[in-house]
Structure formats: structure tokens, C-alpha cells
Image 1 (tube, rainbow, N blue to C red):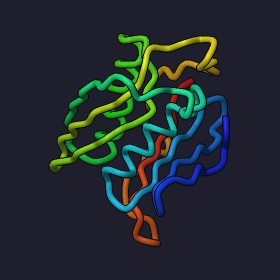
Image 2: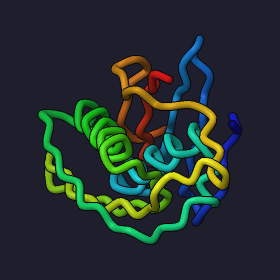
Image 3: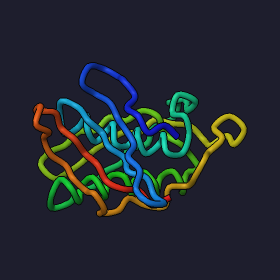
Length: 148
């Protein structure tokens, strides 16, 4: 999978960063919500080319945590749980944050092994390299390492 940023809307993108046998995911955007959405997209891109995943089915996801960092881990782990339970991949995300409560919709489709060709299974988001906050340029960044 790519280790370089994928360009999206202006100032919104995701990237991977290597971490021993696992993979770092990072989302960047003008808001916390956008950074969380991009981190989720980066996680999908660890598994497959997200452009091959049709955003046909919507799944609602909610979680809550005492701070932004723990909320990011909870968000990504909730997505991993939904992927495993529903045998789906997601390629579009809409996150709403109210303090430390996250309400989101993830759009995707059932896994098609021939079309999606999943490279790895993401087992969980970890606290390694965990950081949510503003960069020097004022953008929001949300990152952690996922166990593959």
C-alpha cells in the first residue's frame, strides 16, 4: 500500500507512515472531523484501494471517550468491528463531533475478494504514535498505528 499522501479536497488528505511490522495511519484536514474521516480512509487504504470500494451501504457508528486521542482509537476500532461483523469495507465517512462524542456514517459495500484484493486484515487501532491536534500550519491531524 502507498506510503505517500493522497490528495483530496484542498487541505484534506491521508497518509501512511511505517512502524515496524504495523502501519501508521494519519488523517489531516481543516477540522477535527475531517482529520478523523481521513484517518479512517487511511485505514481502509491499508487493506485495499479505497477507490474500488463502492459507497453503497450506510452504517451508523457512535462512540464516546474522555479525550480526542482515545476517541480516535475508539472510532477506528468501531470501524474495524463493523468491517468484521458485516464483512464490509468502507470508502466514505462523515464524522460529527460534539465534545467527546462522535456520531458518524460510514459508507461501503460487502467485501469482494476478487475486486478488493485485501492485502491485510487490520486487527486494531493502538495507542502507539497516537496524536490528535493542530499542526504548525493550523491543520488538524489525527494519527495512530494500526495492528495488521
